[in-house]
Image (tube, rainbow, N blue to C red; front, side, top):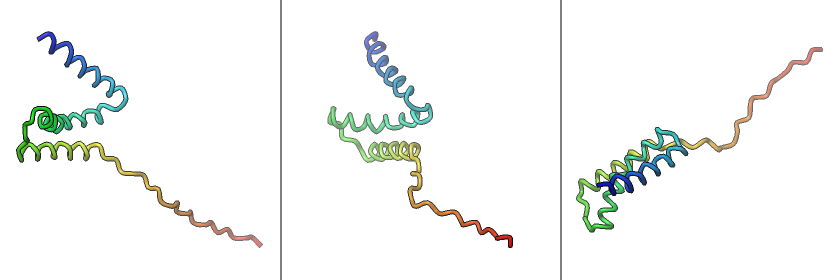
Length: 92
């Protein structure tokens, strides 16, 4: 019990604090939705548990939610639109 409290939990909180120091809390919290999809893939790879249709759909839904929450539109990089010329009247 002490092992579970000290090592995995300490590692998890340390990596969370490290990542949180480098981004905002809102962006960091969105990444927690990746955890179910990662657990599904890890159990498939390491334990040989084949995910069912519902598990795959849930993982895809979680990944789609992360993608939507972290999406930022790109800045426009097209040619600049010239400003209209100012016509001045000459006194004369």
